Amino acid sequence: MAAGGQYREGLRFSRGDRPLARGHLALTTAWAWGYGPGMNAIVVYESHWGNTEAVARAIAEGLGPGARALNTDEAGRSAVRGVELIVAGAPVIAFRLSTEWMKTQIEGDAKAPRPPDVSHPLLRSWLEGLPAGQGRSAAFETRIWWSPRGAIGDIERRLKRAGYPRLAKGERFLVEGAYGPLKEGELDRARAWGAELTRAWTR
Image 1: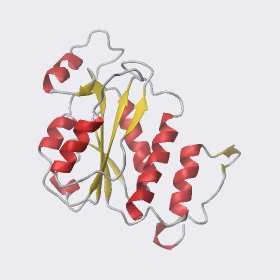
Image 2: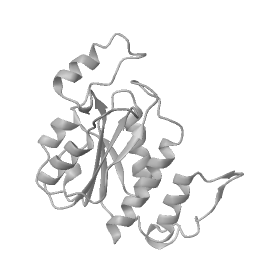
Image 3: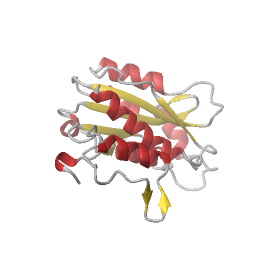
């Protein structure tokens, strides 16, 4: 690794005998040009079936060294203090950002293949309690492709109200069904989007 965390020596087009996927290539290129290190960024997520968490972690990887993916419990006041970029995301439930009533329905869903994780606050609640700050933001959602509405607009409005205006257009990541899994290639897209956010922040 080069000084300051720049991955100039690591700018490779293969990993072992395997070519780098698009997302890995994008983030490696971003780091090689020195975009990633030094930005205080967090990716905050609500996730019930693990899909949104996986996307959040991939975005954090794309953002570069030092970026952290945090659930809404982990992203308390101390974690947010001094943050320059907040990326926040949630699954689309009933065509929008989920509510406490929806959380109750998720918890009692008898059709679910496994118990959902409902142990953390909803992203809606986290956004309502977000202290005023001075930074930028980006929003993402996980959803079925045909959903007529989503959660990105609501997330962006709430982040802006707290002092984190939008850095870049929000991104949608697709799942195969109501409980997942993510469509093939979505994690690579998430890493690539994280690298794009880092480049946008440094302009």
